[in-house]
Length: 209
Image (cartoon, rainbow, N blue to C red; front, side, top):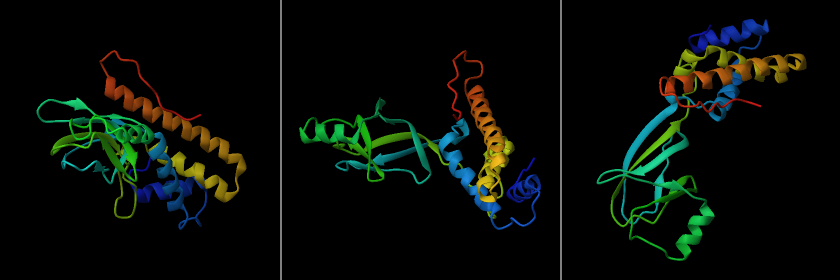
């Protein structure tokens, strides 16, 4: 199986038995990677960011590699969770002028590509964000990543699935889709087993279909 970007492109061409797709195969890979961001949730995607939110500023920047929030909480003297609410709910509470700048934030929502905090912190507040970061995409300058190391079959079948419509190979769509779906499920199962190994906890699995 492929261990780097160059080998992956060659392997895709070999599976398709075509030598005239050099310019389009990177697009198949990019389409697969866009889908990975939506369907793969692996413990290796977890990232922690800590920063100080300035007092009086209700908006907090979202990390450039942010994909999905796992947990947000205040750190420092004690720790308290900041939980997600809808933007409409926070707007309603803020309109009623409840608890404005008298307490540390305990709600957040997504607003204009930022996190909006409520209440607005009255003073500088240390906040830690645990989130899923985007999977680094492959390129000529980034020949490999942890996902290609972990699941080369996922990359292969994901790219092949996106090749079928381009090549008008309708009969192959179902084949590549089924193999890709199995690879997605297998990757997420392996991630959850690694995360909870020995804990006795029930796994929550993410697949397709």
